[in-house]
Image (cartoon, rainbow, N blue to C red; front, side, top):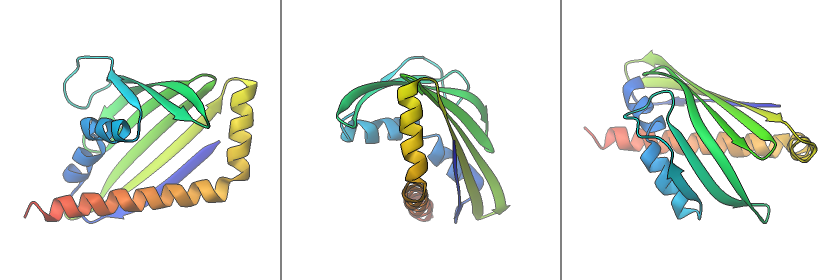
Length: 155
């Protein structure tokens, strides 16, 4: 099952890539939301092989997820793979410079169930596809706004 979205951001591609690869910032956000995040590597900067382990509560149960960067093409794209009990998620994020001050961000999430329980979860997401797509669009918009504000504050 796939979810995808696009968002134009009023900032240069280098600034947007810095925002989407601010893994320390994403870790702090997850910690504020109650997740426990542990870095599994000692690599520098955004590069393939960076990995994290996250423990969080979802639907009343504690879940463990491993997240790994599979590919990084600065400042154009990154690919990450997350895996949790019975479910793999592949995220492909691409950035395209529309002009010097405008970047189009597109993401594609592919959910691949490996167990019956994961298939049931994905099936429920299919039934709620409209709501999930709206939430994804809202999150992309909020990310774009935050990124634009951080760019404007620089100069």
